[in-house]
Image (cartoon, rainbow, N blue to C red; front, side, top):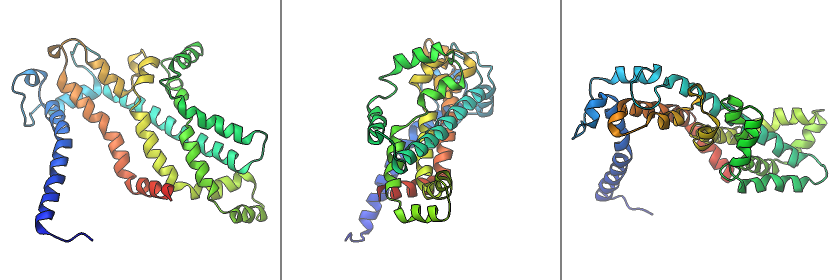
Length: 283
């Protein structure tokens, strides 16, 4: 039992607010930098209060027109590419994982366990390990600088397959028998019983996989050379070129702030389902 002590309450709140300040200070600096002109930022000391160039900076970042040494492509286009890529990867991973786990658990076919372990072993082959052959295949198929090239190599997930398999194994056999007695076929049982029961796990995986797809860096760095297909994470890298004075740091910081908004929105919007899905998975 923890005794209520006013002094401990004050100390715990002070530690909490100190932690929040440490985490939030770099974000505050990025926001302040995005509200000044590029010349104001490179002067010492850097301003610590917001300036009056906020709307002009974000407008230039979203629709292009900067004069920095690096890429000046519109960030709105980059965010659209990132959004489509993240959504295709997320929906694709969840759909393929649901179907593969359904097949492994509920169907009988030769070498079933061998197939499952073959899927599971791919956990030891992340994109970084197989990036050379993957790039060669995507290049030979003419999929560079395309949504297919950005998403198809990342669309399968052994982790999600394993999680859904473990959940399906906990579904009582009586449900299968009841569905069979009602005349439900395999796909109807999958659609009307398994998918609704997996809704919290799907929600938790949606959050994780959306952030994974949005933050992809290494693969898009190889698969895209055209500014029209830059995801926003790659866009930030392409904006930084030459020395500090040659970059529009206010636009770079505005792009960084904009790049954080969609993942943060998804986490806030689905926080309840995300936590519930993780807790149910632990059970």
